[in-house]
Length: 134
Image (cartoon, rainbow, N blue to C red; front, side):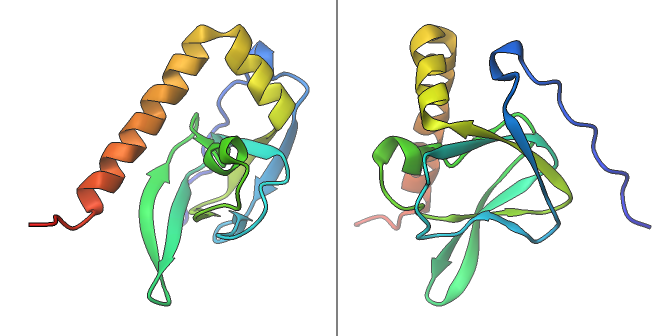
């Protein structure tokens, strides 16, 4: 018996009017190497696995639950996605255009701080995965 679909998180007023996208289990939101197309995504319901291709094999980097932002790194850097984002279960994402995300970050210092903390945590995780030079 498959688990019941997770209830979507309420959409904050600041994100009202955004397009939502349903993503099926195993379906990619974006793939490693894809252009970010001026979009980031907020996981509204479900879980998303971030995967990177290493030696011809997909390797799981992290799992993001509802409420997490995905795709913002490529968007902020202006480079292709460095990893793939794949739904682990039926998932709903909100599509956040770059201009809207930047406007939110500028007008909401608490969001900017939350993004900095999230990026710092991802950097720490990446450093822990890197083999030591000793």
